[in-house]
Image (cartoon, rainbow, N blue to C red):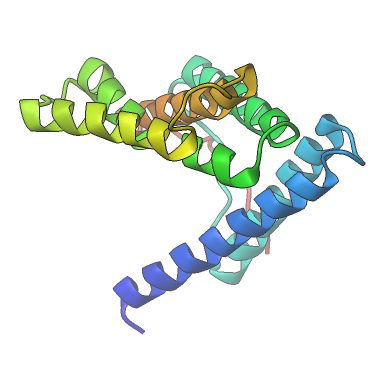
Length: 183
């Protein structure tokens, strides 16, 4: 099978997992504590990743040349998605997801400051129009905006920061002398 087809299939499967996860969290947020949900989500993600790596016979490697950046990325990621899941208890899933779709705008902004990528006027205009469009899709009258609607936007900002830092430090990885593998 072509690598492009494999990639497309993996993206579709991944998006199905994310959609299913968001719907399940929306329905269980009232019955379980947020920490239970986060631990279960993290455990399932770790299990699925390990199963995938075992299936593809790839080693599981732990290590980084920048441990403080890795800890910062993990912390911001955790903080952002905690806020996103809190918002699911107060606003609709459609609103939270639509507000989270501003993450490409934050990635563009962070890319300018962190990765030193030049942004032209077209991109700046696109960021302004896209962000305004996202707000208009959610509440065109702006009279029902509450604090919980900011949480998915903060989650998008922390996600974008985490992904931008990952891009900046992607080639600077060192590994421990003996990689951890499942055999």
